[in-house]
Length: 297
Image 1 (cartoon, rainbow, N blue to C red):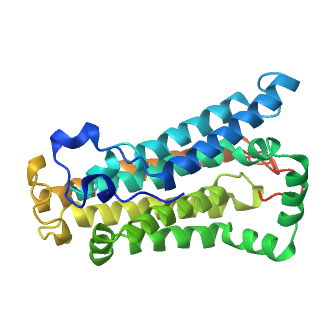
Image 2 (spheres, rainbow, N blue to C red):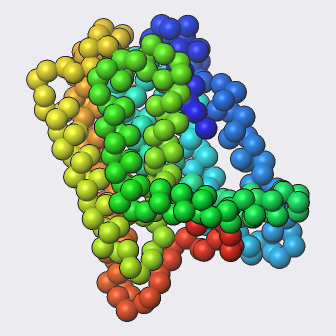
């Protein structure tokens, strides 16, 4: 799924407060994939629960988390927050936090693929099972969902898209704007796919990865929040209709990065440690139920 350009509904002009509730981003590249995912998941859920009973095949809590993940995607890519990011860097930052720190872990915890695959015709299911058993794909998937690789990818993607020149380019180019949000969501999905399975041999690696992301958010957020220099001059006077200067907007974005974003990693870190202390001798404590044989975890 790729993000729409906020410019699509404002014709390039930053929105003002009075435009907020009319600046929804109803772009086909966003709405259609979300609608298709919802339809496939809904049909798969209906098939599972109508045959085996509610909660069988797909747990109710997983369905709820997947629904919340879709709502978070709508909040980040369709709700006027997307258009508001054209005017305020802090809104852009909030959008990134929603995509990487809220939508991504909720979607991964929802474990939607088995339920969605259940809604497909049998021939398609068999073809998909054969495709994911293909050794080059399996090796590639195992590589990109290693904790160290996924962590490095997420940090690189997040850092790249917060370089001032990259932010400036995203404000001017629709494709770059879409690529920014699409790559951030993808990196977030891969990171949480690597982190959330509670495999016994990876507790230490997962804790280190979460701590690194926690510290990274704090340091980068502090750099923005306490700086006396405005780095994102591409926003210029865009925030004035909202009553904030360029520097104030940047500082608020830094506060969001310091306070909100680290909480996602801290929460996951606390849960990890709590599970480890509760069952230190257990070989495998898994939050993500293993996929059927032949499917990616």
